[in-house]
Image (cartoon, rainbow, N blue to C red; front, side, top):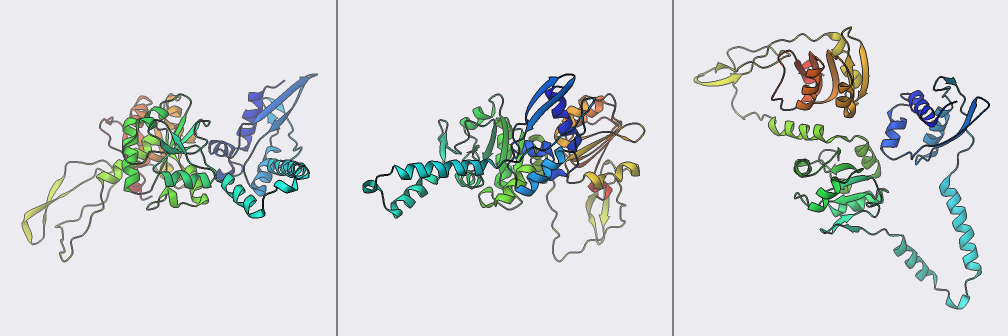
Length: 407
């Protein structure tokens, strides 16, 4: 005797990591490429049988691979199980057959004397096939026709972005039309049951809108166009890749702030400055700057930051390469073994569920919120891809970035 949750857990649990990230069931469901899994179970004589139906929007090859992976499920709950593929059905093919059948019946009853010409038919069909941009709210913001019906909302910058995403089959969109966030957007993001994703350009304008959104609206995830590109110019493949790479909103904001406070240093032409001594590059935390004289300019001084060396166990350093650019997190126990592996988006929640986590290594931004939670779990070492402004850091905790460790 098994129930639906047992079957769902078996499907997700036993196929996880089997086919890589592109065909991971959780990732496919999060990006909307597979729909709600329907399960019907019937129990009789101490045995359970049932049917699993999974709607997908993948190509034939990916669908076949996914179907084959389901047949590898061999246990459901505590019981031995067997999954057999019954059929793959192309829903669009069935609809096309229905359209053809209906069109034939229409033509049979069509009176010749009122039949329009070919050009008129083609013009009418062309106009009817175009999906027009809708208007949303009192501000009459450009929006996709599927905005009101969807529980997932994608906020973009302008009307052209809405149109481009509609061409890619994404209709649950709305545009802010400028850096000032309209009240219609603020109210929309605060509706219960809505997942809000901001899909912004990869330029400074996108940074400004991100900061404004985070101040007045409730945004869960941020997706960005490639650096220097705008959403309206992206191809279907680039749109899909950008939406798949979305990260939690607070981490995206921390990355923007980090870029703002650490500008690229430019060398002044025609001047070579030598220091009286070279400071070694060390991993660790900052001390007060020490003033060092420049050669041939004793009256001018430059601040050189010294670091206290921090020893980081090679066990942790060696795992950075495995999780870099994967948005994953590793939680280590006192024996230096991984006790939990999770996504960066779930790191805070996962950390709350643990009793003690001495070390954390993750491909994300070390924020004040994460530091506060880790402090309660007696964390001694946090290694992240970057670090935001930390105002309150426990003295017993060391914070190190990938760059500090040469990654």
